[in-house]
Amino acid sequence: MKIIRVAVIDDEEISGNMIKRILDAEGFEVETFLAGQPFLIRMRQNPFQLVFIDLNLPDHDGMEILRLIKQAYEETEAIIITGHASIESAVEATQKGAFHYLTKPSRRHDILLLAKRAKEKILLQEENKKLKLAMGKDNLVAGFVGNSPAMQEVFAMVKKVAMVNCNVLLQAETGTGKQMVARAIHALSPRMNHPFVYFNCGGFTEELICSELFGHEKGAFTGASMAKKGLFEAAAGGTVLLDEIGEMPLSMQIKLLHVLQEREVLRVGGTKPIELDIRIIAATNKDLKLAIQKGSFRDDLFYRLNVVGLHLPRLAERRDDIPLLISHFIAKFNMAFGKNLKRVSSHAMELLLAYDFPGNVRELENIIQRGVALAESDELKVVDLPVSLRELAMRGFDGEGIPTLEEVEERHIEKVLKLTGYNNQQTSSILGIPRTTLWRRMRKYGLSEES
Image (tube, rainbow, N blue to C red; front, side, top):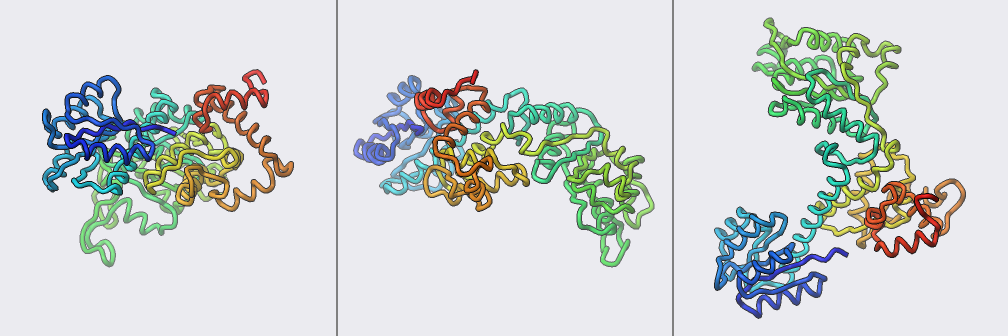
């Protein structure tokens, strides 16, 4: 279990010792200080992750201590303590970076609640740093989690195409992150300071699509009491994502083709074309070449959109990323739900690694969200997973019946070792066991890089 080092700076020895007793009992490692200078010396020797600071100290102002901490140790969280409840002091403390504000006399419940919330934030920040390191700085695209070769190719292509002012076609299954890819292309492009506009082409009539994309003039139709800019105009200088482009009616496809060819738009009811400076990114989960053969999609529009085509892999095609994604989602939903889930049981992890995820990353996120919400301990177990996955457990992993616990453990350890390239430190971290325990299990099952 991760130990959080805490400093309590309070010139009232009884008050400081009370906070120490409360936090010691909860597993925190606490040191107390009666003044600011001894704390600062100790902080330079071995930094604390959480600091309780009394505003009134004999040698330093508490706000000055807070400023020095945030200046040199920006990831350290601070909680201000004062015997004088004041809204102004609270606002000033939080503006200067304090995590929260505590008044004297302090209740045990309040001290513990703030300490646990600060701990969650600290652990989440550390987890995010690990994820970024795992993904590799050179290949990191904002919003993405993935270290598999398939995702590294996507990262590289996103960065490359972002700098080229051309149309892009994203073809991938639902739940693979098409909208996230489009936003990443926009955010990395020279258009990043201009609007990103999203429009879903599915389920709308041609008239409604025209009105939304092209805009209309006053009196163009019943109810058009004033002129309205369309999304193409609103995105001036930026990027438009046309999602579910395969659902667009054929008659509307002709109008969109004209926009792409002429780089201009005519409002509904208008007579004066409006020049456009936008990039179009289209996305679909359909096979557009098959749609062309069936006559439901225009081939000339396809080639206009598909200047650069990007395919996003299914989650089942990049299983190496599943443990990393699970860790990311656990951290995310721990914060959202105020939970402290630390690990996934070996059995649950084996099931998640074996599952095909027809809903891709979105389905995995929903599964972990549900699991974090329902978990009654600090470990996500099979019982916390959906019924469909629990049924998979009853059938056995390979259709060979229900495996023994040792078989589950051996398969899971071997799979995680392979995913980490036999990096024992990463493997023990993912499994949630000490490296010495991992070494003993590897000896027991005869697992090595050569095996």
